[in-house]
Image (cartoon, rainbow, N blue to C red; front, side, top):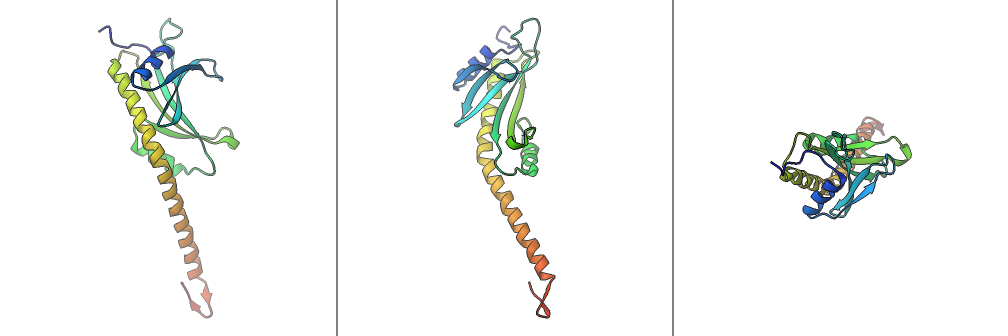
Length: 174
């Protein structure tokens, strides 16, 4: 049972990522001054933030979370975010609009080591995250395009409906 992982540290997370084939480095979160792990998949950078403190070891954490942030240019429809969330149980999208000039789309996924987990479980969390990222970078542009196309069709249909209700030259035209 000595290979069961009961807590997470920046070092252990870095090792887990590297053993899964990812480049990983420890950095410091400039906002909270806590260590985090930086990595990337499919050319997209993400971070792993350590979660709740565990026990007397100041570096030990009960959980951690993968976080990937995209800057939103233009409008992001909440229906797109909701559609992703309704079909993906663990990886969640959210819109962070606390700074209106810098709206962000955030993909996040938490995982827990408290109580003890096998290293293979942590590796599977990395694999699930990697799959979410790969899916998102293909799905999101296609979904946004489909939504914009549907909105354009609705706007055109709505305009046609209004035009159809207006009599022209003594008759109704469509």
